[in-house]
Image 1 (cartoon, rainbow, N blue to C red):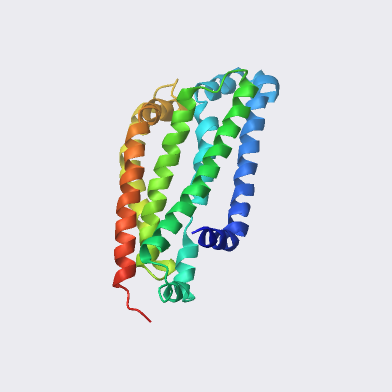
Image 2: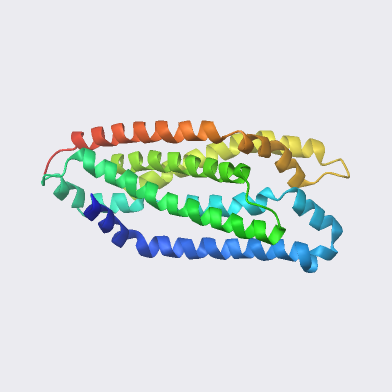
Length: 246
């Protein structure tokens, strides 16, 4: 198991380090904006500063979400199938259960590292605000972690089930577009209804709509991650077993 995990790290380290660097730049940008709100140029613009302070969730949770979503990428599994490595593994004593469990464990390790980095980022953000890092903030970050983990486990199933990266990408893009259209129809309609109000603030709108969901999502996201892990493991093992041996 350790050897397989190390092999995956050698395969993906350049990609993940690049994604980590990109996410770190976003985090630094958010931190600089937050510092500017306290003692920089934004501190002089009362309207903008108050709007951003009311919507501090943007600074707290968008960078962790971007980081974890970027690191949930699983295309390397399909590359192993394309180059014949998975076929080779099945000629050895390594069982299908071990192959699948290692992939999911490796993904969990990577996302756990992203969770720790997100907590550290929020700790710096709290220092900039002069406030403590609360359990409420940690639970919200954990909710994001469980959501991305569940989605990543589902992606593992598709990576084993479909042997072409283009197919997996097309499925994920199609699902994303459909969800966005459904969300957009209702959201943009509400925004259009409220935009006539002279005090309307788009950031306040999203805070009032989605902050309560995030604040109460911990248990639901934990359950989603557990169920996705169990279903993903079972289905992935079944998929590998049904493939023809070389």
